[in-house]
Structures are given as structure tokens and as C-alpha cells.
Length: 493
Image (cartoon, rainbow, N blue to C red; front, side, top):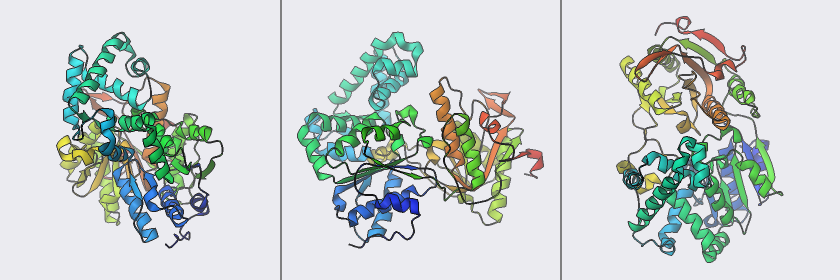
């Protein structure tokens, strides 16, 4: 089998690829070529003697898994290894062994709507809201917290309802087993139970797998980290790739500390850094790094590429914001930058809905990429990716949330609603405020060359127009790092 050519790799990427098997940590900034390093490392391990059928490549989405499989297959000229999410891997195991946990062979995966029905019934019986019960249950599973700790973290004002919350969770769990169904979170929980309670299964899986590569390690929750540890217990040929500055899934139990804890758990691990962005310009990196430094976080990303200064544009309203985006997007399109190579990013889906309506009125072709698949559209396979895969229909400017934009890139990015309470959202804890800063960092680093930061003076909130305070992220940017314009200075819509 041919070895993959290292010629297209940087020196830092090549060091990752050729590192000996064993615990390996790769801290990779946005646009630093971590996908290339990871796929070349997988191909290198296979060429060095690890059978492709005994290598696991664990990713955060099905899209990333398919991309990596294709790249490895092209490198090797042979069948690539299995790649997918931990949820998909868990489903494969449970299809064979769920009976050990009391499920019948014909168990089903609950659709999102079906799960909500069972959850509402359990919550109603104890006089609670289904959302509260669901949130606490998810934190206990994914965050490794007790019900009390989860309640204090998510809804401390409801701590007196602790016993009722526990009862509702118990009812929910019992109902799922009685109806022979699992929900999305159960896939990981039950896979972890198989590995921890049945020694023969853990030994079998660990003995079969010769090497594991994990992408986006900072986005794993406690249960996922536990599963990876169990699968790699025998061989320790474990490579994890991540970036603490891109940890933006704390609400799902993910922990930015995963990378440091990996080093603590594997004192002999080799550590590599991919710190040069091959995507964004130095001007964009300077803006992105400002929010991290303001929160005491490490801004390690650099770039040799140069380009135009990012622009902050103050606009009077949401309508003017949309007009500004439409004008700029059309101007770039006239210069040869396709609308599909441009994106407007926002903090919440509600922001996207309002922007889409305004762009429709302006006649600008666009596609909202972050619409969640309904349970009917998703089916079981659609439920086995985390986060939910976006449905992309049509052409034009891309509209998406910052969370859904992670792992993507565009030539031009327009970041909207940069006001306090909108981006960042209002937070009640320092940890949440730090995660908001990381979200801004992720959003800005989606841009390769052009970046426009938009700050409306007035936005509609709860049916009323309210004056806005510019986002703290704008104040943290050095005066010479971004050009500060008003809507009137940028030209006609």
C-alpha cells in the first residue's frame, strides 16, 4: 500500500503526521490545517501497519467524517477507515448488544417529537416544566453532574424542586425502557454502560481497535471522554485534536479543560501545536484575538497572509444592517466572489429569521443553513450527528448561526447584531461570559479575507424598538485593527 506523500504538509503538520503511535495531543487553531494533519496521520498509521479496519476516526459531525474518509481514501488509494460520530459508533454497538441492558432487539430511536411527549408526561405528573426536567437530565448525563449540581448550575431558583426533578427524570427513564426506546443521549449513556459493566465487551472493543483519532476534542462531554478512554485502554495509540479557544458547547457538557486533562491523564503524551492560520489574514486574526486577551485567554494564532482591514459599520437599524450586507455582498459578487462564498453569521436563530426576511425584501438571494431537521426529515441517521446537520437548499449568501458555522470558512463574513444582549448574549456567570468570547473568536475566524462587523443603534426586542449598547467585543478591538465606519459613509444601498 503506498505511503501518503508529505510534500503538501507544513513542517508543523508533518511532525504531527509522523509522530510515533501513543498518546498525542494536537492543539490546532482555526484554519491551521488540522484536518489535513489528521487525515495524513491516519493514512500514515495505516501505511505503517495499522489495518484500516482497526482504526477509528471520531468526528463531531457526519459531514466532517465523510470529508475525512474521502481524503484518506484519496491518499491511500484504498478503502478508508471507519469515520463517524461517537453517537453513530454507539448505535452500531447497541444494535448488537442492547439486550444486555434490558432492551428488546427491535428497540427504536425516539424522534425529537416523541421524546418531547414522554418528557412532558413525566414532568406534568410532578408539576414541572418539561424543559427544566430535560435540561437537568441532559446535564447529569453529558456533564457528569449530580441532579443537585445540575439544578444549581442551570436553574438555582428551582433548587427546592430537586426531589420533584429527580422523580420526573426517573419516570422519563422508566417510560423509555418500558416502551423499548432510546433517545439521543441514551446512545452514549448505554454505550458507556456496555463498556463499564461488561468486561468482555470492553476487552473485545479495546483489543480490536489499534488506533483512535479524535477531532474537536474540546467539544467532548464527560461521557464521551469516558468512552474514548475505555476504547483506547489497551493500545494507548490515541491522537486527539482540539483548541480550547474554540470550546463553545459548554451548554452540552463540553469542557475547554479537556486538552489539559488529557495531558494530566497521559503524562507521557507528545504535544504539538498548529498555530499558523492558512485561512484568515493577519488583520482578521488581530480582531479575533482581542476578545480572548480581554478575558485572559491565550491568543496563539498567527498568519502570514495579508489583506484589507476588517470594518466595523455602525448602522441605524436592522433594516439598514440588511441593506449594508446586501450592498457589500453584491459588490463582492461583481468582483468575482460568489454569494455562496460569503456568509452572514449571528448568535441566535431569531436573528437569522429577521435578517432573512429583510434580505428577501431587498431581493438578495440567500440560503438559511441552520434550520434544524424535523424528526420526520431526520430519521434515525439524521439524529446520529452532533450538532444537528444543517439542511442546505438553494443558492446565494449563506446565513447561519455561529455554532453551526464552526468548522466552515467563507471568503467574506458579515457578523451582525454586535450589541450587548445580542452578541454577546446576557450571561449570569463568568464561565458563560468566557464562552461568549470564544464564540466571537470562532465567528471572526470563519472569514478568509473580508470581515464586516455590524452594530445597529436600534433593534426590536419583545415587540418594541430599543436603543442598543455596542458589544464589548467592539470596544476590545484596537483602534488601528479595524476601520470604523457609519452606514452613511459606506455608499448607497
